Length: 259
Image (cartoon, rainbow, N blue to C red; front, side, top):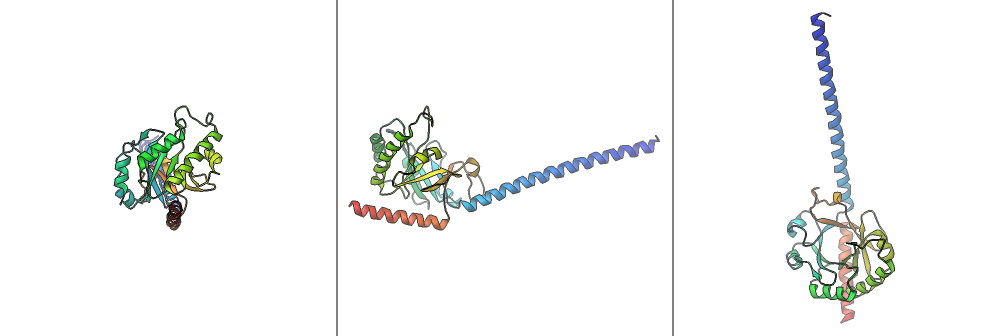
């Protein structure tokens, strides 16, 4: 082969290699672009479907700027007050005081104990809350911990105990009670009177008014992720305002009946 032919052959090979690299980069760039676009579209669809979102706080969370949460599109906050028969969240009083006037609707919640007696849990709530019950239904968070799990917790006993705790909480607050739990527990508890539920986002049913969100769905209105546990109301902003109005009217009516 002549030297010029050899050089021409090598140049062609280089061109092919460069073209191959460019093609791979274009394909990879296109795939990345599609992934980003699809993610953005999914986020926008989620934000449209769940326009009313809020966060849950306890003492393990970082400092919460409630005004900033409201600016970022949050509509409400649930603050842990108590757990079991004796535990009070170290940050409850500070979080509750600072949340007032932020523009967020405020709720409080109790972490249910499978072992503590119901009267002791009721007294812990009463002792900690006083009149600081916020604007929303008091939430009871029923989740497994330590050695308690779906296999060894008796569903009938759980229902009896929660029926007692719910009845007391309704009398205390003049509002329905919101139970945050799994769908399996919901099936055992869904007939409890004066009760609403918060379930994982994909689950719906009777009196399911709120949804707990996965980590990828914990988004502010600007699309940025939240460092807090986020939940959502099932409904539009108009339905949210209607929900708050009905809640207030029912509370006022029950309060008058109890006077």
